[in-house]
Amino acid sequence: MEAKAQPKSELRGIVRIANVDMKGEKKLYVSLQRIKGVGPSIANAVCKLSGMNRNRKVGTLTDEEVKKIEKVLNELKNHVPTWMLNRRADPETGENYHLIGSNLKFTHEQDIKKMIERRSYKGVRHALGLPVRGQRTRSSFRKGRAVGVVRKKQQPGKK
Image (cartoon, rainbow, N blue to C red; front, side):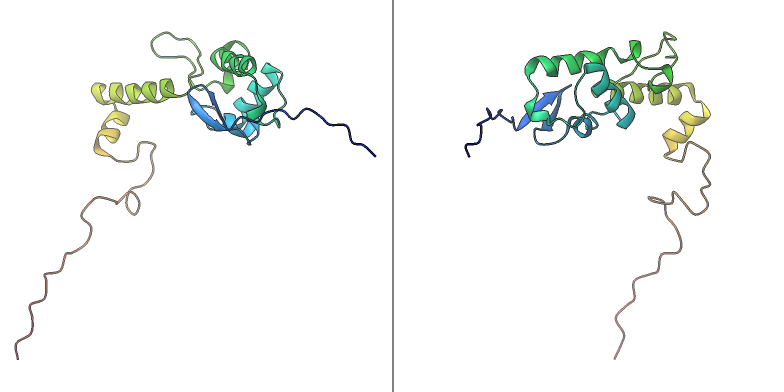
C-alpha cells in the first residue's frame, strides 16, 4: 500500500495583519480577535466577507489573502450592519466608522480629552479618576486614597 504524498504547505510562524503579529499555528477566527477593535462578531464577519474558512491556520495564508483580509477590515462600514460598528455617528462628521488598532486608541484618548476640556460631568469624573458611569463609590474605587487611621510606630519598650 503506497500512500499518495501530498505537497506539504509551508506554515509560516508569524503573519502580520493590520500591524499585529499573529501566530501561524492559530486559527484565523481566533487570531483576528487579537487586533484591537475586532471582537468575535467582527472576526466572523471578516472571515465570511473575505471568503476564508474561519478555522484555517493563519500560517497557511498567502500574501494576497492577507491583503484581502486587511482590505475587508478597512472597508467594514460598507459591508456590515451599523450596529456592529464601534464608532457610530461620529461627533465631528456624523458618519459611521469601525476603527481598529492605533486609530481606535488615539480616537478614544481624544474623546476623553475633549470631555475634560468641556468640563462635562464625564470629563470631570475622568479627570478626578472616579467612576464615570454612575457606580457607587462608598465601598468601591478606593484604591490610591487614604482610608482609615494610620497608627504611630511603636517605640521600643524600656527595661
